[in-house]
Amino acid sequence: MLPSITNRLGLTSGQSILLMGIGAALWFLAAIILLIVAPMGALEGSARAITYALIVPSTLPFVWLTQVLAKLRHDQITIGVAFVAATALLIDGVVVAWFPSSTAAHCRR
Image (cartoon, rainbow, N blue to C red; front, top):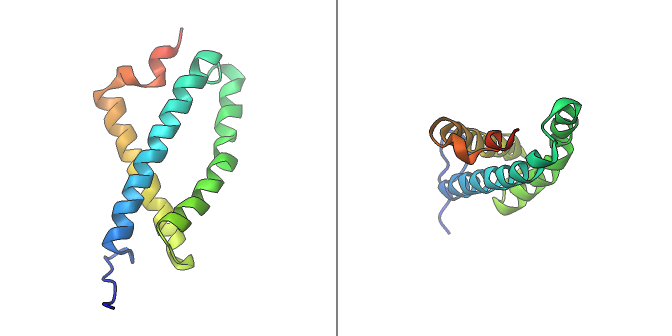
């Protein structure tokens, strides 16, 4: 068996591609959830603080899922999760800049 070649981040090419896919999938899931909860008023007033506070505990299972799906070692978890988050952040920036009507902002009254 050939040894896996890693990039500067310490991830294999397969792991990097998979992490990009996970980031895109998580961004899409979050966008759908926001489109559902925005009309309910979850992004208005004090409910906004509660909604954003719930983000941290609700994303913890995805850290574990990312580790399992990408077969990350314990020393790769932080960089793997950062890679997923960076991918989702990049997609979010593109969508907000170029496709603003597809975000939850248009659901506000």
